[in-house]
Image 1 (tube, rainbow, N blue to C red):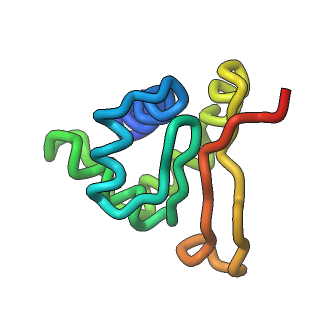
Image 2: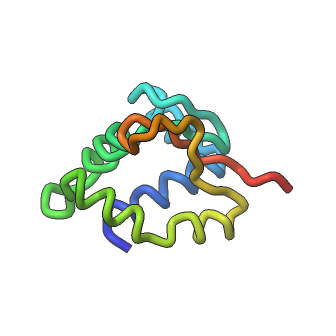
Length: 105
């Protein structure tokens, strides 16, 4: 797993665990979120993740998307009872709205 996706997975875990400090950080970055829920557009997600990484580990947006779509992120999240899903599909991945959410029991 790339450094960006490892960081993203750690962030997802923090949201799912209700980490108030991390959720607060996301809210400061204008993300809609709460314990167990994180809503985002991919360009904003990319910017947030890259800002957390050292320059040598950063990936440009096309590479980040390639890593994201080739990853097993949702498989790992399903083991935690969650998933990343499309909330609103605007026919372009940059415009569509995604979320991390808990799966129904």
